Length: 208
Image: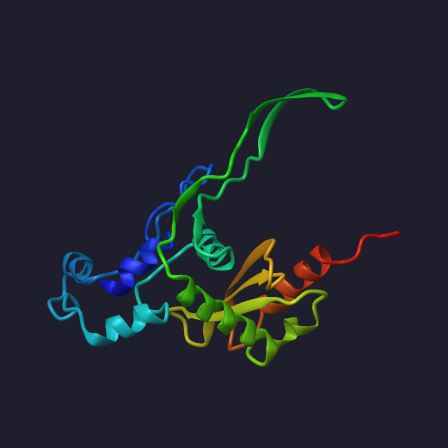
């Protein structure tokens, strides 16, 4: 229950409220959910292995890439959970005479829900992941980055969903990027090269 509580604070298990249709909430399993979901009496029982699974993002837990990037954004920015939006503003008129009808202002869902000390521990761990961990391929980007990789199991043998979430620059983040590549054969860093290409383009010096 405590793990679920904190994951919910970061926006998991509920729709984000993004301005797109068809969003799903994902799933954060708990004993009550397991009791009501399964028919087999043995599968209804919450076991310590279920807690282990949810703690590392395995088992019955499910989240969307948008929920993941939303959570990592709050880690990067110091503890503000923003509602994601796609529309920046609504305009009308011709290309040479546009009038702004509505500007979409950033909306904070919650803030100050995690201590600065705890956030710093996570940020430092993500930075270490680039310096000498699983994301070391990002160490030669034009700016310092922080990253967390992930490999999610699927029902098929040796087939995985490959994740990475990155924010940069480390000291003053301006971009958070989550890449998910589904159905990757074997253990490999499929998402990392994609993230590196995107960030290399984003931080490339302007053409003269």
